[in-house]
Structure formats: C-alpha cells, structure tokens
Image 1 (tube, rainbow, N blue to C red):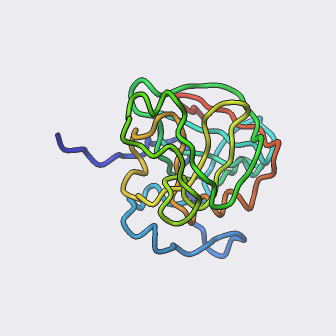
Image 2 (tube, helix red, strand yellow):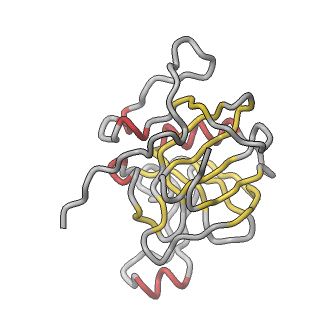
Length: 186
C-alpha cells in the first residue's frame, strides 16, 4: 500500500516569512529528503501557554515551541502509529546527546529481532539527541530517516530529523512543559 504525501492542515500554524529573523537556520543534509512542509519554520500560533512550552499535535504531525506574541517555531515530526498514540501533560525530565537505546520489554516482545542494547551514535535509531518525557518510556528524539517525518511510524515517541532535534535540544531546558494533544486549534 502506497503512502500518500501528508498535507499540513490549513489555519493551524500558518507559516510566516523567515526573512532575517534570529534563529533561522539553513537546511541540513538530513532534511534533503524531507517534505518541505515539515521543515522548521516560524508560524502564527495563538496560545495562552508560556513561551518555552512545547505543544505536540499528533494528528497534524507538528511540534510547536511557543515563542510568545502569537508565534511559535513549528517542527515536523513522526508520531506513534495506530495503537501507539497518546495524550498528556509531561515535563522534559532528562536530555541526552547521542543517547544509547535500550528497547523496552514491550517493544522486544512485539519485535524480538531488535537488539537488547545499542550504543549511541550515528547509526542509533534514537538519533543525535533525546528529550525524555516525564517518567514515561517516550521521548522526543532524532532520526536518521527523514522520509518518516509527517507519518505515524513510531511506538509512541516523537521523532525529528537530527538537525531539527539538535536545534530543539539547544532551545529547551530540563523541566520544560510538554503538552501532547491529538490536534491543535486556533
């Protein structure tokens, strides 16, 4: 079955011209195969949440980093596949660069061929950075598969291409509030 190209919803996080705005970063090599609609960009975003809050819209496949003044940085993400989506309010409990990966027991039960441990590095499916979500097994992390951004592909984690997760990692501290919703409305 062929996957159709994801289309960002209209009206949610409408794009703005980057122009000479601070923080604008050119595309990295890992973004070359990514749908341009999912590349990081400043957007109009109305919210009462404080600047620095992360809001994840699983249905829309976007992560928003609230900037204030009705603005946010919008990042395209891969989300949990059917049966692995969730909602909630958590905080970033830990951050790691080139994290090791130890698949949870439930994942190994479903996919017994997975390694029991994989050291961090460029070949690791956790990618360049990981932001751990509360006391859950879930993370916001990098990926070496840019073609998966915009799709429901994970076991509940949220993935960004490595250049994007490095950018997000540099902008948010441990303790950052993260709101996971099915959809974001204006």
